[in-house]
Image 1: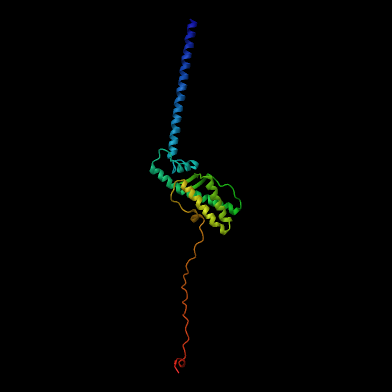
Image 2 (image 1 turned 135 degrees about the vertical axis):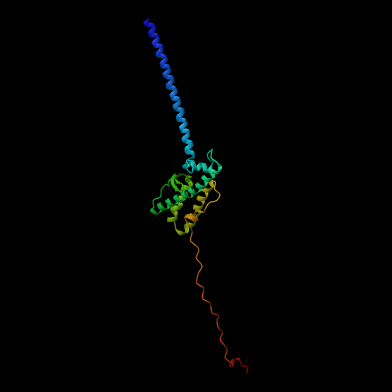
Length: 214
């Protein structure tokens, strides 16, 4: 009798243990599915959040130069590109000004890349290709350290670097950076003073007697 009761007790414990294992496994499965749902929702929220759909740095540059993220309406992406055009210009100016500051101090270094750009839509972490970043930085430094006769070459390099960035990003219209950041000397203004009239020479009048014939 005692053996039968012990066997029933052991079988009952085994059944309870199996049931507990099933419950724990089921709870873990539900927790994993819930966590995955929250992560997916957070990613979707981040993608649609902000003026650049949650992008910044190298990821934003790659989206501008290659293909936009999937799931973004064409009209919305056009608005993003319009905002990015201003951010790109502000980034170019920031690099150039950093080069000028370091050139004035005589302490050239590596320009920051990526860097945080203050835009009308808020702060943006922006990344640009290193060759153009170094060229813009050097143009800024050269603009305050080179002789006047070398500035024309600095202006040309500045224009080429800016043009390369805009074209890589798919923009067909862009400003000459030298006109904004390193304008050349203005042509002289026309004189506002009327020139003094030049009097015609007066030929001497012959004497009355000299005009008579003999």
